[in-house]
Image (cartoon, rainbow, N blue to C red; front, side, top):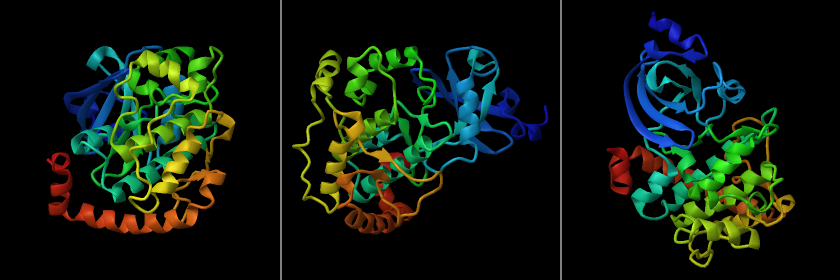
Length: 332
């Protein structure tokens, strides 16, 4: 097969790929790294466990929506159909620096404040993009391990195995979410207390609030608690512990803490919502890209802070020696 045809179609077959090696596994499939021969670049292939025809409707919609999509959402290059694993899957851009969860584990704590503010900003931009697609796409599994980092430590949302088009959320995916202790900590109370629960944009907003807490503290929420207790206490109003966060430590942190509490509000209707058009917002936009009365006082201070931090982080990333001292394991 001529390599030149590999990039012309949605389906990517074995002839286009070489040098397969397993790099991980997820709830919906095995993940491999391989080289795309035509593009001359490494890609990630996520093989999906289910085999319901040439491609599921969700795969097709995800592919159409993400080709040429958003810089803060992982780019899907095509659908994989081949012999490996006798399965089908998604071919995506490979993210060499791993996930935010990997970063937090490597640092054994939160990232430097410039990177913290930049990553949380970029995550909100990615979520804004998803929620303003037609039809909207809910992520439904927003957590540190599902935010990947490229060579410049730019944050990109991933895990299409658990994402669902808003009008089609399956019961089986929700049940799988509840069995995953890591995902459970990021689930909203309404998802744990009603058999008639239907996911909405507010579901992702809640998860974003908990994700903010995780990045700021460098910890997993409820890390020492039993999953059964977490499942019981979240609907009762329990949330991640804010006592370990000193809002005075850095300018803008107080506003971020207020945003956390707004996002994980018990009442979904009182949570803020992701805003904006499906475009790449500039740094002059609302840095959290969420609307809510808790943000009105924060917009000016946080925009200025983000502009300063963005300049600093570019300097840090471009200075290879400094970058190696700060995040050496990530640059090996």
